[in-house]
Image (spheres, rainbow, N blue to C red):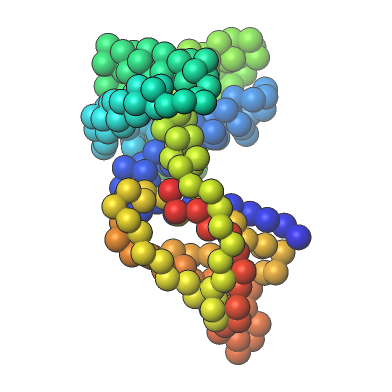
Length: 250
């Protein structure tokens, strides 16, 4: 049995958080070893993240969510049988993080002002545009020492620390809002009603059976349809049998 978790955002803000979390994770992978292919991959993910940050105004969403969690933590501190030490540590982290975000410029500004990144960024949008004859400066960098490369990548990633920390703590709060419950999708289809506070639907299912979930809907109502990864000849791409899975509406 292979249990896999699928996450489906119901709001655009959460969709952006998940995309940023994913891209930051890919940056870690690209920076993890002295390997030319992975280092080129690092730049691809970095420029994709920069494109995303330039289109979004994340600061207001992050600050609003951090403020809301700070108020909740202050309220919870008055409850009996609460872990005061853990709560205070989390509260201090949120207050410090909020201050850092307010003090910083728009996310990605330091990256846009980096001369080397600016010099190579445009070519990454061209298919095959990272060949040595297109970007000799990139290939000079790729031939430099592992120590020098790690220092550069650490510096670029450091400019995103506040963003990474904010997204991590907000998604952690969101994922922990609701526990998983076992439900059944009759004929591979399940429909649910979201309350106003639901922002993320999490689905755990056994992917060893050859199917995966898809979700459509909005913050009011959603439906989950299970689809065959490889449907047999003449078979419907939709699963048409009962599927038992676990669901968390966060």
